[in-house]
Image (cartoon, rainbow, N blue to C red; front, side, top):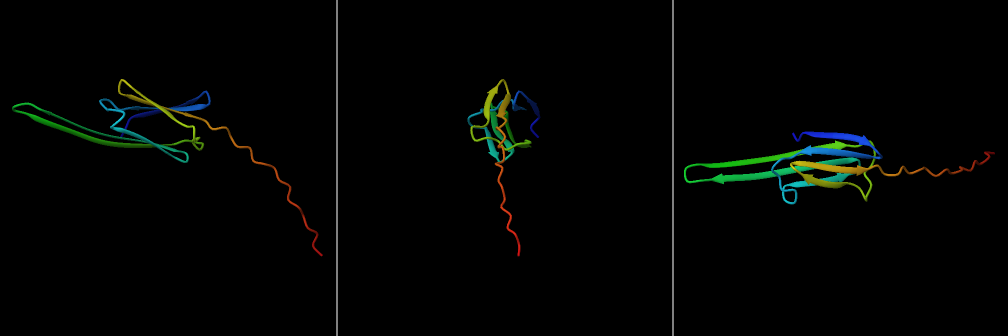
Length: 107
């Protein structure tokens, strides 16, 4: 599991995920579907010297469902010092249009 923290305030949600040692361009993928934000991370690392070899591999995924659909202009992501920060602005709520329904007199 990816340790995450989700906060809400100022018209936006902020998701912070702890992903140390990752290359954000190669190892991390963020997808959006409706009201769900998914963070996937996959990392491989190997070290080798004359007498010893070490290989580490990890694959993680975490999805967060927000209480609103994510707007198209949507999330922005930043990776710094092992912390991924994804900011999701709250979409302006669509106001339903009011319609008048005609009534027919039944004979």
